[in-house]
Amino acid sequence: MKDVRKILLPMVSTSNGEAALIRGYNFARRFGAHLAVLHVRPDGRDIAPLAGEGLSGAMVEDLMRTAEHESSRHAHEVRALFERFVAAHPDIEVISPHSVFPWDKPSISFNILNGAESEIVPSHARLSDFTLVPHPDSGAEVSSSETLHAVLFDSGRPVVIAPRTPPKGMIKRVCIGWNGTAESSSALRGALAWAHTAEAVRVLHCGDYQRRGPKARDVIDYLSFHGIKADSVEFPPVDRDVGKGLLAACHDFHADMLAMGAYSHSRLRQLILGGVTRHILEHADLTVLMSR
Image (cartoon, rainbow, N blue to C red; front, side, top):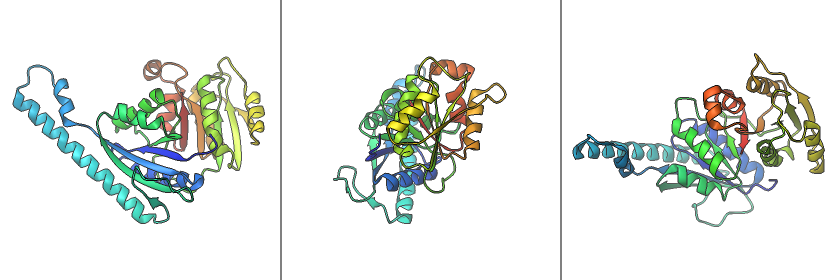
């Protein structure tokens, strides 16, 4: 994925939204791409089938009004954040969601759609080069996490997770977490867009992380076919935790981005027992590209 032209940024709320907008702005400038900001507004009427038995019609109506009020508030707050952001960054052109992309410079658009976020966002992600999502704070922004997983499992495209705090500057140092799986192969392909212009690239591998498949040395050879010079480092688990060891290796390299496969084991197993993907989602403080 060398040629990035369209980046999708779904924003369910303003939580961690500024950091995601800044990262998206940096990406749009780097690739001369379009950043499509999307807010999906749920329909309050969708709550009626979920209300269950034992509730009066008046109670259901009250729940629907409350849901509609919350939906309207979130839409207003996201739009206000977007408008403040573009006012502070006049060098990026604001266009309508359906206008012709200006090929000579980066651009940004904002769109609100009504419906189910789990259906609309993956659908739009399928025709984007990758989807950028705000960091899903554990336990604080459940719907944002659901957006991330909906794109991971139902779009066929990579997800880039913005850090919690606004990043500074462009991505210069890229780590690729490798374990030989199809998921890590997909992430490797997605990382090429950044690896081509990075000042340093490192492939990270660990014996406890490796599955059947190509080894790290084979990744170095593959990258060389793309004109990318990289080295490889085997990292140890920290406190018997591979995810913690992977992040420690990224910090030692002063990495700006980590690219890795997501959920080589099932998502349910990782939610119950823990796993590398879960640890990275909960603890990473750098930009992370994940792919299934």
